[in-house]
Length: 566
Image 1 (cartoon, helix red, strand yellow):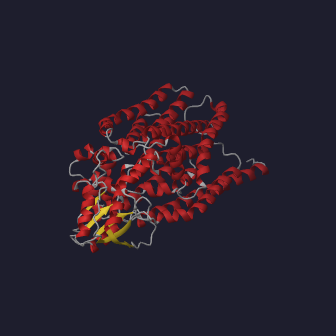
Image 2 (spheres, rainbow, N blue to C red):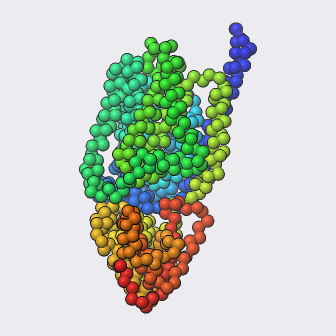
Image 3 (cartoon, helix red, strand yellow):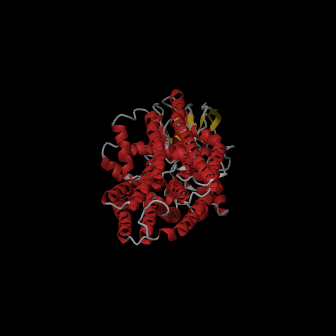
């Protein structure tokens, strides 16, 4: 037996060690991410308003009610059916049961990353685990009782299933890819772009291989999936009247700002990384494909290296390019006031495609593999401290406020929440006898989900919070207390609302409806209450800034004649 030359043998040994190092780093980062996921499930605590919305939608007595009210939340019907199933089997008797549900979804995302990597290259998903796993937005928002995590898991399954069909285009694999695509889109609307990107990527590879039947079926997979979404046309039409209240004026600049916020929840160092990674994925994928195509022009689709490298590189480059541009256009057309979780699907497209492109590249020298693995270690080390803080962050403190108010307020007192959206959380956890209301005031049976259409109609009126102000005045006049849940200005306003609104109009800076209500409320409280006390809510954990509220108590009637609605 002829032994390889000493130089070649040394190079092979270094390459083997580098691959082993890559595997160990990927396993270590996966273990760290699993710990973060478990930590979040242990500390997230009570459900916050959007999670309560999901739970209410999923547990209506009739599924027809859930279907009719899809317009009031962000997800297709499948998410609510799966959440309903979790409740029906008795696994959600407490909030902890829902946290276990979120934990399982986060762990399933990790599992899907490893499954896809094994399918595509028999190497670990180092890039994807680092970008997605060690990402505060994924840990928190995919681990919450919302459809984002499940949608990402199905989206990643779809991505791997489309590739598996491309490698071996059988009827069974096409059906599996179709099922995954349908599940992905009927769990998270944004996944329609993810599916389109994967299908176009597969069709491009098939056309390059002159395998026309595979290309047609890849595109058909996307078309059939899109056709199943037509059942939601009535849902979108139903929200047409009031959706303008959520539309933002920021355009692409606002999109960029919110995307930057989403990827830098842990540290700002991630912003340039998320800018560079898509560029490298697309350019690197095309370069790998260009270098490998000459030696593999006659090979079958999906054949192992070098043709498999070329196919995977082209698939990754096309899917990242189309997926990222498609997500940007989708969100721009939606034009809502963006939140970080709106970009989770775009993150998944980039991470999955970049990981595939990195593994498709020629292995080359061991140095490249070692540098990527060391970079991943450094990033996770830098991010670990803020990620740990996010993992122990409570989702809300409204449940604790509700408990304190329940123990302190009596029947004759009055409770006001400064924002109607927080009424969902308060309604779930408050069991006291004192009456309460939100701004704007909603019917008692309208605090289970986000009834945007009712709020939109109230915006059109000029006397929205008059009854709330009158209840405050009457409560304080009778010697009782008003409990205020929200945030007060540093100094209660002294300028009458009418003159303040007129001045804002002259400055071409008109107040929004919510600003109007809050100013009127704060002015009335400042005029009527002679004493205000802030009640501390003692929680040792950090609270998510989306629902970290304060509790105040007002008492004492000022005998002056106050015109509360001026």
